[in-house]
Amino acid sequence: MKRIKKFYSVLLADDSEDDRLFTRLAFRNHPRLKIVEEVTNGEEAIAYLSGTGIYRDREKYPFPDLLLLDLKMPRFDGFEVLGWLQQQLFSGLKVVVVSGSFLPSDIARALE
Image (cartoon, rainbow, N blue to C red; front, side):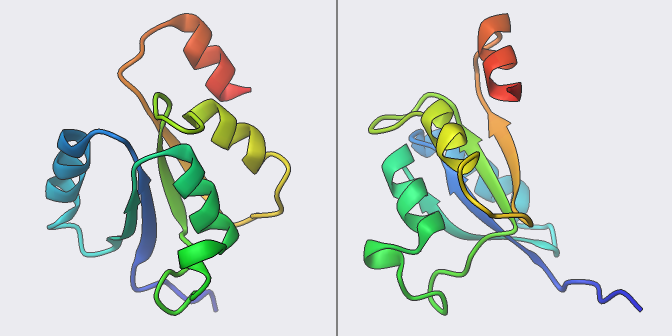
């Protein structure tokens, strides 16, 4: 029998305080989605996912089930994070790209 998770942990990677606020508001009444951490650039997202630096303690900073990833961030953009993820073995991690870009080239590149 497959065990159903009580909630899904979410890492929110977005440099916009407004976007993070709207995401928190959207998730606040959802019983199965819990934002476990918010980071503001790609470098922090990679550190969190790899469990390095301040994110070493997996009790405090659990590995997420879902990454909400903005494409346009400083210090490694979302594309660089996606490239790094392709070299990792995070089989259970789901990634959702969040962007205000409607450029076909950005969409195609993110899907690669």
